[in-house]
Image (cartoon, rainbow, N blue to C red; front, side, top):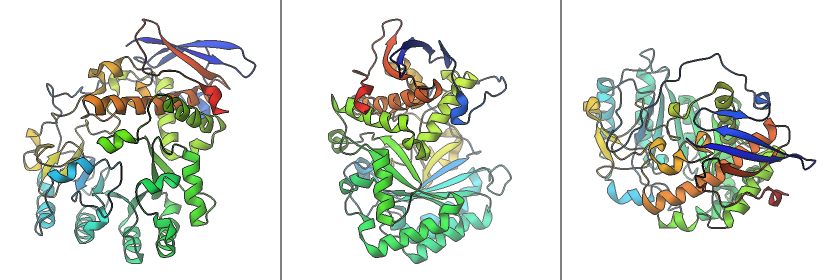
Length: 440
């Protein structure tokens, strides 16, 4: 891994340079205050290397699964302009009436039942398309799993269009965590705003009031070249709901899964504008109210404090891990929950030892990631992207995570603003320029 010089400027225009080794998470040149992100160094530990999965060295899956992503199907009541599943819908068939009972009947044959045999330490994620399109199937599956494995955690991500009082009450009783997809001022790219409908707005407020006190609900926004303010997204949603604030998460700057995603991705100087906007919100601290931003930054600071090597770093999505599995109701293991069989079928859970994740490319095997100063934050873009989609995804991720790097350094150095990044061995860096002055 190359070494990087991070050039910073203090409020009184003094400059200083940090030497950053992404391979070992070592930064020299100034003392960093990890406590601003609630981090203290952990005791020394051995760091086992993760498996660098690739088509030549495919990943495996284990019966000791701890994240089980159940694909109910890819049908959706919307046709969002940058859906991560849009290009896959033609490859998936309809759910059959007997699929859900057969899935439950076979679950204990391939899954170990969790850490305690009662679902402990395991999260079941129920995915669409739009999961509430599959309401009867979702209800059957979740209740059957809850009855037999009561300690499992449940989650869904929904656009909220199909929520009603019955569904909200059920989600609360069964113990779901719920992510509501909403992009604030960019919601028009998804379609009609459910928060403009008084009845839907009241249902969503009820969901927040029920699940919010236990931290089981958030709004999940995606940033694009058309809308890229984390603060504006939160403010838009809170104002429409008549609330002081709402819990927010983000996928960051969008990954393009098709031609529409490419069109909504920033190009050229747009990256600089987005970077500067994000950095401004990070410097003032408002963006850290977004749980995804806070967690990513805190994990980065913890990695620096602990000296986490890049060899211990898996993919951002986690789907390269043996204990993370995506499966449809016919028992077909998939590359991830956003894909479908047969194109992305990697095996069957009935023969879990034979599953091979062969479409993935671990970040350590991509030259752009090996030469990247933000790899410890980014952890690689989508692991199955190639070609132009990969190049654009890398550009988008680089802009977003460079802003997070600069924000973290600003707070950990007590006000140092990142001005430039240079590779000591001359390796080209993806970022065209860093212009934090635009953040003003």
